[in-house]
Image (tube, rainbow, N blue to C red):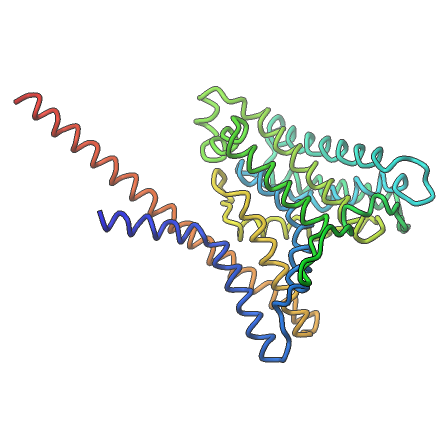
Length: 355
């Protein structure tokens, strides 16, 4: 009994891998910056980190649901650029069109691009990596062809609220509109993934697509839907990015797809599919931006920042994967022990009945 309780406790601790990594990164940069006379964990700095991470949370959600299905979406950054460039002219201050019109068009276009990704993966049997990689180049190229070397600048202030709005300030900590949008998005997708048949189908299909197909799930339709949602979330993230930058241009979010994969892995998702908790995306995003903010506070050269950032992210992902694998190993052991115990009980009852 004590051994089983110890295993359960160990599994729960391993399940908190993202939180453990996040706390470690915060403590690490607090100590390093403190040694240089910089107070890293001020309310305003923590608020800035969470606010910046909120933008990446939206992209991370879009990537995470595809990873849950056992796929990957490399076109996310390009979708962010192309959709906002194509409809960005209607977001300019001197354009009389309501901001709601381009927002709806951007989301619809993003969903359509995701639909094409899903069709290529399911109907043309193109591997997700290749399909979305090709779509990345197509969208980025179309954005450059459409806008050429121009930049759409000075967007409507009513639209920019989604990235710059402030709701409340408490003791130096500012709650912003992006934080609320990120929190609401996480909550909505948590409900979808954990409390709907769609979410259960996504987990089941990601864990074993063959078994899901034989159980009656239309895996092709599910895959197309998930890719559509993924690219729609990318398009929405693109709206938030251009609102923050006050401009739209073809080179937007060049590394967003890699960052989204990184925070998904740090957040506890498995590239093989079928495993992950959507709340881990928030922790992964905070880890990534804490590392970036910590290095900025240390005033490291940009070249060195790139090197250190890559090394720390590799370490974070590596540690998280070890802990998650350990958690799954312990849970499997517990399931096996429980199965053996039930078998022994049934055998014991059978002997009693025979006697």
